[in-house]
Image (cartoon, rainbow, N blue to C red; front, side, top):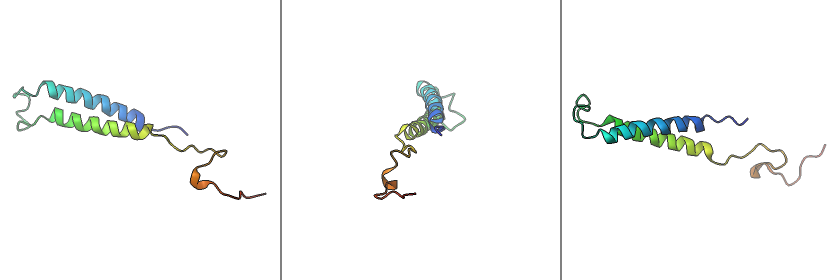
Amino acid sequence: MGLDIRIPLGLIFLITGGLIGLYGLFTRHAAALYEKSMGVNLNLTWGALMFLFGLVMYLVGRRQKWQDDPVDPRPWEKTSNPPRH
Protein backbone atom coordinates (compact mmCIF):
# COMPACT_ATOMS: atom_id res chain seq x y z
CA MET A 1 0.00 0.00 0.00
CA GLY A 2 1.48 3.33 -1.04
CA LEU A 3 -0.23 5.64 1.47
CA ASP A 4 2.32 7.74 3.33
CA ILE A 5 0.94 10.57 5.44
CA ARG A 6 4.36 12.15 5.98
CA ILE A 7 4.46 13.81 2.55
CA PRO A 8 1.20 15.83 2.76
CA LEU A 9 1.76 16.49 6.46
CA GLY A 10 5.24 17.78 5.70
CA LEU A 11 3.90 20.04 2.96
CA ILE A 12 1.23 21.45 5.27
CA PHE A 13 3.82 22.26 7.93
CA LEU A 14 6.23 23.67 5.33
CA ILE A 15 3.63 26.06 3.95
CA THR A 16 2.15 27.07 7.31
CA GLY A 17 5.53 27.46 8.99
CA GLY A 18 6.85 29.44 6.05
CA LEU A 19 3.91 31.84 6.13
CA ILE A 20 4.08 32.33 9.90
CA GLY A 21 7.85 32.73 9.78
CA LEU A 22 7.64 35.34 7.02
CA TYR A 23 5.02 37.25 8.98
CA GLY A 24 7.28 37.20 12.03
CA LEU A 25 10.24 38.29 9.92
CA PHE A 26 8.39 41.27 8.43
CA THR A 27 6.90 42.37 11.78
CA ARG A 28 9.98 41.88 13.97
CA HIS A 29 10.33 45.63 14.63
CA ALA A 30 6.69 46.14 15.67
CA ALA A 31 6.97 46.27 19.45
CA ALA A 32 3.20 46.51 19.98
CA LEU A 33 2.67 43.04 18.46
CA TYR A 34 5.06 41.29 20.85
CA GLU A 35 4.18 43.17 24.03
CA LYS A 36 2.09 40.30 25.45
CA SER A 37 4.83 37.73 24.80
CA MET A 38 7.46 39.75 26.73
CA GLY A 39 9.08 40.97 23.53
CA VAL A 40 9.68 37.50 22.06
CA ASN A 41 8.86 37.12 18.38
CA LEU A 42 6.82 33.93 18.64
CA ASN A 43 5.73 34.07 15.01
CA LEU A 44 9.30 33.89 13.78
CA THR A 45 10.32 31.24 16.32
CA TRP A 46 7.40 28.87 15.82
CA GLY A 47 7.30 29.51 12.09
CA ALA A 48 10.92 28.37 11.82
CA LEU A 49 10.26 25.32 14.01
CA MET A 50 7.19 24.34 12.00
CA PHE A 51 9.12 24.82 8.75
CA LEU A 52 11.96 22.58 9.96
CA PHE A 53 9.53 19.91 11.17
CA GLY A 54 7.72 20.00 7.82
CA LEU A 55 11.00 19.73 5.95
CA VAL A 56 12.05 16.68 7.97
CA MET A 57 8.66 15.01 7.50
CA TYR A 58 8.67 15.69 3.76
CA LEU A 59 12.22 14.45 3.23
CA VAL A 60 11.66 11.30 5.28
CA GLY A 61 8.47 10.61 3.34
CA ARG A 62 10.22 11.08 -0.01
CA ARG A 63 13.23 8.85 0.64
CA GLN A 64 13.49 5.69 -1.37
CA LYS A 65 11.64 2.80 0.22
CA TRP A 66 12.15 -0.91 -0.21
CA GLN A 67 9.30 -2.29 -2.22
CA ASP A 68 7.55 -5.50 -1.29
CA ASP A 69 8.44 -7.24 -4.52
CA PRO A 70 8.54 -11.03 -4.54
CA VAL A 71 10.56 -11.05 -7.76
CA ASP A 72 13.33 -8.82 -6.38
CA PRO A 73 13.17 -9.17 -2.57
CA ARG A 74 15.05 -7.06 -0.06
CA PRO A 75 18.76 -7.93 0.18
CA TRP A 76 18.43 -9.40 3.67
CA GLU A 77 15.51 -11.60 2.59
CA LYS A 78 17.38 -13.25 -0.27
CA THR A 79 18.21 -16.89 0.31
CA SER A 80 20.87 -18.84 -1.51
CA ASN A 81 18.66 -21.94 -1.75
CA PRO A 82 14.99 -21.09 -2.16
CA PRO A 83 12.60 -23.64 -0.65
CA ARG A 84 11.29 -26.22 -3.11
CA HIS A 85 7.75 -27.47 -3.05
